[in-house]
Length: 219
Image 1 (cartoon, rainbow, N blue to C red):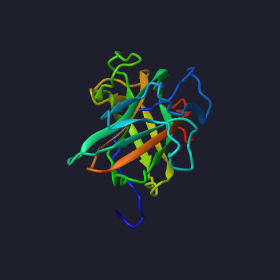
Image 2: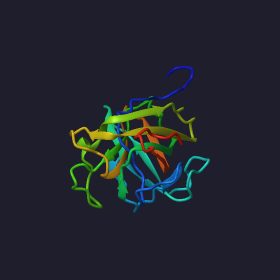
Image 3: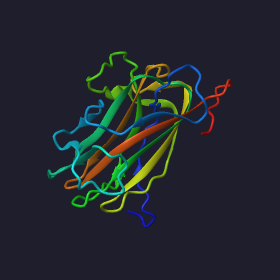
Image 4: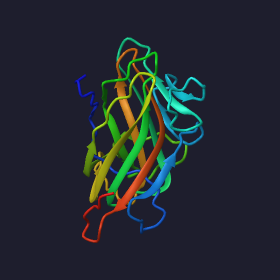
């Protein structure tokens, strides 16, 4: 890892994840605050080697008072681990979406040098329902620009990461379908090297709508 300790995020362009409660949103509005409780609809890729924890050994400072997600790879080859959630009644709109969340470095496993996928999803197939699994073709990969520069957490600590997605009116999914107006989701996923792990907790989303010309605002 470089001396700057900046983590490489290979973020594929995508959409947005936030509950739009009306067609008109206030600038820089907090639209999602999710403390990641075990019954809150998060899908865990790679179970049982990724799960919710509520034990008091959680690293400090504590992002949220309840549960958090811990992922690890105890095998001898890289394996996919990650978290995904669609947000009921939340629709993608053109504008700027700022997604923040906490990642943690467990005491007993190295944090991965590269997090391969931090993306937004859109239910372009129209088949999402609570409890259903995600569709990888619903990654929004066209009509979005992404900004992110995040530092990996120190051993035994949490750090806050922020990714900014600027979504255009013509955003489309990897399956080639329009993404605007579809149910939104979020994906944090990577291929963990052997004996590595990560913690994940407390996600928020802020939204600034595009102006009348279709240009996204700045939060």
